[in-house]
Length: 272
Image (tube, rainbow, N blue to C red):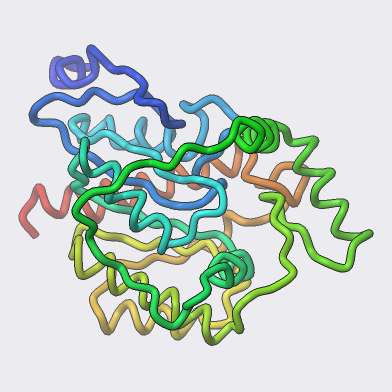
């Protein structure tokens, strides 16, 4: 490391989230990385998951940036909107990157809301984190850290009528593809309206039936967008069908790093 790197990284520490340690100096800048358990990646050491690889990648050219991994199991863009509001009380995001890997899983997430047609992305004046029961926390911890449990959960889907995904969710209901697409666009509009050119949506959704429409919508509405169909493949998944393995996390981390460094950070630095 050069002197600038040492200045920014000499007193890093963990803030209770998965990923690399951060160093919140007065002139530090922050990247909020948003997604579900595929981004949270509780199966591995924080330096080996996509958030950790992303941090290493941007350290080389922009060490003042700290990656805050806000990925969490079962979180859709609507829940993540309020998760960002909560953490903004301590860290002001300079870049916000939202990543999703499965259109089908997104359909299930959105199906949980009773009033789906009127999901409101608003800023709340004050809010606190709700406490979760010790049983749920323990079960979630075991499931997120065990590739064996993820495999057993997936195998159960062949014996049950309801499909169970790699997060352990029973996919017995979902929105129609059209409604899911509409909800996704509504969420992207909200993030873009709040963060502008500092927001970026990354799709890994090989199963998205609206791939072309999504790309066109983002282009027409000036939403930063990128699609990569080469990450969610069996060789990058635990046992070929679970969460991202080490290889998959590395590929995603480097891919996100290229987006942040080449497009979002260096472009702003160069004033272009």
